[in-house]
Amino acid sequence: MRWLFIGATVALSAWSQSLQESQEAAIVKQRASILKQVTSITGKPAQPPNSFFAVPWIETLPSAAIPPPCDPMRPEELDKLIDESSQREGVKPDLIRAVIGEESGNRPCAVSSKGAQGLMQLMPATAAHFDVKDPFDPRQNIEAGTKLLKQLLAKYNNDVKLTLSAYNAGANRVDQEGGVPSIPETMKYVTDILARLPKR
Image (cartoon, rainbow, N blue to C red; front, side):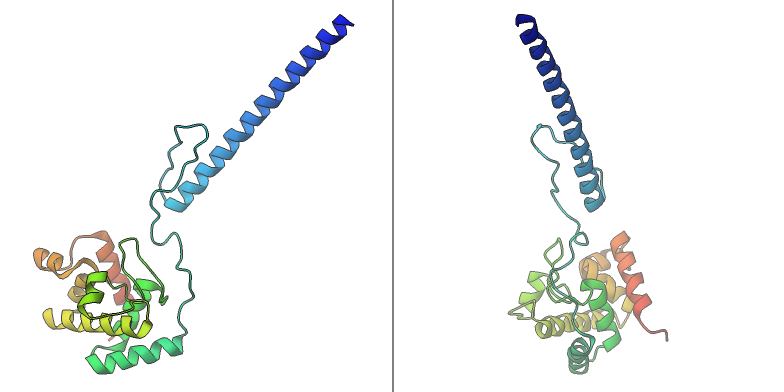
């Protein structure tokens, strides 16, 4: 009976060790899967956590990683607001439409990682300057964004490249560099919007 008990204990111990090794292997596999998912979301290699129980988490997400929680505006509704602001401020509707498409994908609830809000991605200071009460209200947002475009077009003598550069990077940066700033994001921004505009 004693030998039977010892044999059962040894078998149980071996089974327990095998189970533990199997669980550890499964955990390693799950961690690798999580690291891969985090890397795919952030676009940069995720670092393994120090703690056994911790998981690699996302400290900051690029704005494009999580789409805004609303649908794009219907074209007929958006076009009506664009046309109204265009006529009021004397800014071409195609330019307003292209900026909206590039800035927010026509989504009125869009918020960037830098805090820009709404269809034309107004920064809080810009929204306050143009007395915007609700930056997520399409009408108020487009009106303010169009006024900003009008001011920038006047400042840069209707130079659309400089206007778009200032809209994206700020007028101070454009003035400092005397042209389109050598910022990859701004250069891509200007190029993408110009491609949206009808060819003259």
